[in-house]
Length: 383
Ligand SMILES: Nc1nc2c(ncn2[C@@H]2O[C@H](COP(=O)(O)OP(=O)(O)OP(=O)(O)O)[C@@H](O)[C@H]2O)c(=O)[nH]1
Ligand SMILES: [Mg+2]
Ligand SMILES: [Zn+2]
Ligand SMILES: [Zn+2]
Image 1: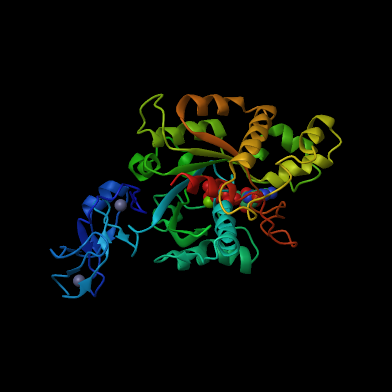
Image 2 (image 1 turned 180 degrees about the vertical axis):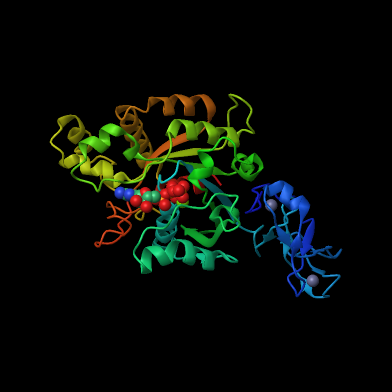
């Protein structure tokens, strides 16, 4: 059953209402604002003609008299893109403290998804609605044209926050003659909001309805790693809040803030900026250089573009390596908390950039993503 890309509520079996896509101006909608926790503008709702089907509902706007086939979400009134109900929809929410690399994982994950679809599925990835324009302006232009890092994502209280609207991508997965239309929905969230226990909880209630939540952890938060690598990586990198505090706040949003409640939503815990960890190979400290030097380790290869779907065997090896690494890094409470509060979690490692950036500019050798597709392929494997 498909979910709304905006509030992540499940859509009813039949569309309830349509929305005008003609000349009527949008107006503030209080019911939708209550669901989303921020002001929303909606065009007039349109009744469904009796001869409509779930696949092709039709109606005529009472005001501008123009025909529409666009379904409105019954909860938040978001305009559901065409062919939504015929596709397998996967909704993913990004989470993690400030500067853990969420937005860069979104940016490079989507770029790699284009390559995966082309090489493995013989398909193109099509951004839906206003996604193309927003993805270009927020992610692609800074990274690819200006070759600089993007600014911190604005909190949900800002009307221009990237978290207020989903990124939606349509593609066709073709494997061994089986054809599966898919849509991937991503919500990038500001770490600022996830470090703050006093946020408007309604704005983050979608986290309790996502198909998967990606929780990013920054290895640079570990003081010992920063100390060992002091000469190898640019200093003065900004650091976000405590990963365990953020994990607990995110689990709160995922479970309706019921103390200690467990969630069925799969959580991908992603150790980000993995290029930083890979630099440990070169340090003279045997404790740290040993961890990263094992030949054949899943921590030194990336099969992301070589396999059409998530590879459980490779995923298991990676899970164990990253689990051990997190314990070595002195963050074992993350494991305990995930065990207590989630039924389904898995560890990943990823580097969006492949190399440390210099000040605010991308390394002149360019972007070389490492294992950024894994968590996306995993999330799509159970929808
Ligand atoms: N070395 C390295 N640094 C990275 C990588 N990804 C992110 N960074 C650094 O982390 C900074 C923040 O990355 P973002 O993706 O903007 O972080 P975010 O989690 O979206 O942050 P907020 O929007 O504030 O929540 C970047 O400007 C880089 O300096 C990576 O793969 N490798
Ligand atoms: Mg961001
Ligand atoms: Zn909705
Ligand atoms: Zn109208």
